[in-house]
Length: 249
Image 1 (cartoon, rainbow, N blue to C red):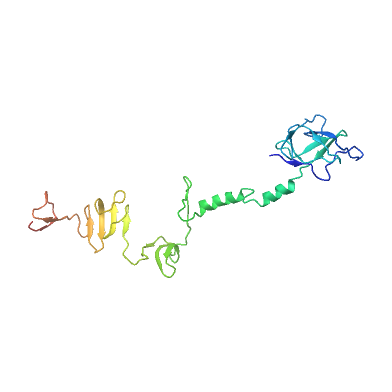
Image 2: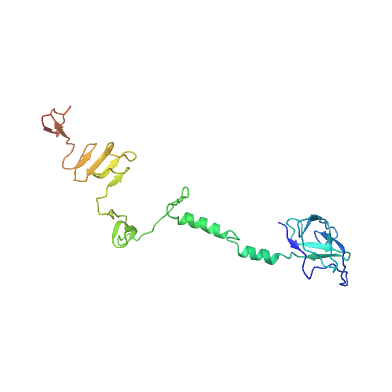
């Protein structure tokens, strides 16, 4: 970035006593020290390259651009090196202040907010090996950690004691799927793997009409290891306690 110098009433070619030097030629330096380097990568206000400065007929130094990145220059018109400051500072400051995000803080803040409070349809990137969210609750069950509402009534709620009440907003029975999505007509369906579009593959199902279907043995303190069979033929290898309901095919 090149900064603009000269072209103002205080940038004149002068002698040590302040006398103007019309049409004088001056050099540009990197500092006011004796070992300073002369700078020749200069550009006039029209974009033409130049290596030295030329005062006008009134001894004033026309506007010019210094070398890329040079914020301070020292000029010498024969009476020593004197510092020259950029003249476009105010313009650059206005552009900076009026910029949409001059310091990048808005972009940074947006990135933080987007991770913490994503917009609808956004994705939260959970940190590795850390809990994303921990809710500390009193455990009295009087309040809820999460609740769904249509603005008037409250439906599904996760209470602060861990209880979960599932109440659909629509009023229709809501199926509880364990390890899967539940097909229509099933109230509770549990699968050993991922969801399936039908009852096939389920290990335990409660139908909407109250029927219970289990893929394994149903046991309890009052029935022991009893097994229930039905059909035209008795079960293979019957055991004590088996129940066979015979019907003709």
